[in-house]
Structure formats: C-alpha cells, structure tokens
Image (tube, rainbow, N blue to C red; front, side):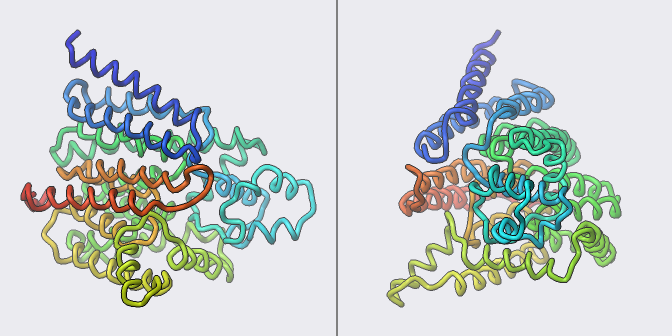
Length: 438
C-alpha cells in the first residue's frame, strides 16, 4: 500500500471521528468547539480533493455517503429548524393546512390531546411561533411522510427526515457525476461537493433540504442538456416547490431556450401551481407572503454588503439605517445584476449559476451556513473553487451562539468576507479565469 493511500485512509478515519463529534458530542452553544471541529474537517477535505485521483468517482460517492451515515442516529445539534419541519408535518396529516396555522394561535384554539402533544413535543423548540410557515409544498410533503411514519415519536420522525435527505443526496451524487461526464470534466470533481464538511453536516446532520432542491434541479438540468424540455421544466418546478431560490436561474436559460422560453416557463409555473393546489385558499399567499416579507425586511445574520452599507450609513446619519429600507434596495440591485449576468454576459451556463448565487448571497441580509450548499454544488461543475473556502469561512458564524446567547462577532464577519474577497479577487483577476462556452 502506497504512502498516499495510507495517509488518505488515516485521514478518513480521523474525519469520521470529527463528524461523530459534531453529530453526538457538541451543541451550537459550544461554538468554538464546533468551529475547531470544522477546521479539522476542512483541513482533511482540502487534502482529499487534492488526492481525488487515488480513487474512482464511484468510490468517492460511497465514501461521501458513508460519512453522511455517521449522523443517522443523531439529533440536529446546530439548528432548531427541525421543530417546525415536524410541526408542519403533524399538522398536515391531522388534516390542517400548515399555511393557515400560526403555532401560537393553533394551541390557543385547541385543547385536545393532539394539541397538547404538539405543545409538549415541539412548541418549546420552535423559532417561529408567531410566523406562518415559509416551506413550499414539496417540503411539506416530506414533512408529512416523516410525521406519518414516525407516528408521533420525535426521534422516529427525525430518522425518516434524515433518510429522505440521505436518499436524495445519494441520487444527487450520481446525477452530479453524470453531468460532469457530459461536460467532459473529470467525474472525480464531485469530491468538491461529496466530501464538503459543511454540506454533510448541514444536510445529513441538521436536516436542511438544500440537497433535495439540488436533486430536482440537477435532474432538470440533465434533461435540459439532453434537449428534453418538458421533463426538465417539470423537474424545475419541483425544485422551486422545495425552495424558491432556483427561480433566480430561470433567466439564465433564456439565451439557450430562445423561442421555447415561453413554453418552458409556462410548464414551470403550471407545475408550481399544481404543487400549491392542495393548499389553495384566499389566505394562503397573504400568510406566506407576510412570513417572506418578515424574512427579507427584519431578519439579518452574517451578511456582508448589507452590514457594510449599514455601517457607512450610520457614519452619516448617526444611526443604523433600517433593514426595511436597505434590504429592498439591495434586493433590487441583486435582481438587476442577476438579470445582466443571465442575459448579457458571455459566461457559460454553469458559470452563470455560480455568479447568480454569489450575487444573491453577497447582497442578501441573511446568510446562514447552509445557504452555501447550492453554491458549492455549482462550483463543482466549474473550475472556480472559492465556494469551498466560503463554506468553511461561513462556519465562523457559529461563534455568534457562544455560551447560549446570540451576539454577532463583527470582527469574525469581517475576517470571513475579507478572506473571501481576497480569494475571489485572485480567482477572477490574478488567475485570469477564462470565459468559456461550456
């Protein structure tokens, strides 16, 4: 056995221990232990991607899935979003419309065994007691499946949610290999996504559904590459029905679709309408819109340009300009830049997807670590690697939860985005990345 093989196997064993620590031995309040564990895992990750030629792509997929399985019996340690997932699932199988139910009001309006069990099992952990759910229909379907199979047992419901995500990740990795092959890129490049510690922890560990979004999106793009527009549009609708952000990518398809644009967009919108149809009511979009409005005009976390604009504004005004003013302005700027990239730039389609997601993340007011998952996926289809660094730097935001409180460390945020800016500058200018038509 060569020295490189032995080093790789020892490193994988060490990373297995690191992932196990994050799965079973730390909490979000142990912020610096979390960051330390991630730092070790990312060191291993960067070593492994340099050794990607040691194994074939199928072996790397099985290694990636094996690392994900470490979390199979764990509870989400770094996020409490799962309480709302299970809440929505239970409410849905009870016959209620989750888009019309405020958790706080729901418990006040009911005094039966079901409501009491909801309160006992979940209510204390909800971070959105006074908000309508923002999770689209495909998410709700997954939540309902887990709630039905779990039969009121939180641990069982978590297991079924995790199995859904694991199966989605397995399928996604094989789709990623297929797309890389079509693009005539080494299929071993999938290691950039398959072994990324943030991707593994945030999806398999913390049960975020970005992987399911990417599953449908990757399938849609695979069919799109093959010229099967109808199937692609249906799958694209499923991606949007899991999370709305893929809508940003639709304009980038226009230069390729040309005269088929209206038909493709029509199928996507029709598919999305069908997904929402079982939940349709007069109050649906008002309630959902109110929660989305709260998200974009009140929530702020680990932002970059937004915090910079807010700071500059405070120098002139003597106080921080409100997010309700800055947030919408940055959203409009983001939309205009995205449209320019999609319609006017000469980058390849997958380069455009990377740039579009990057612009959105740099101009939004909230950047949780798992928001980087999609960017990591799309950069694995290009030669750009800044998302791998960003996925580590975003972990610094867990420092804000140190000792059970919440207090953003702006020095660490400055370090995160300063290092990112330097590396992105190197990527796009010093290295003189070529614009391709791949």
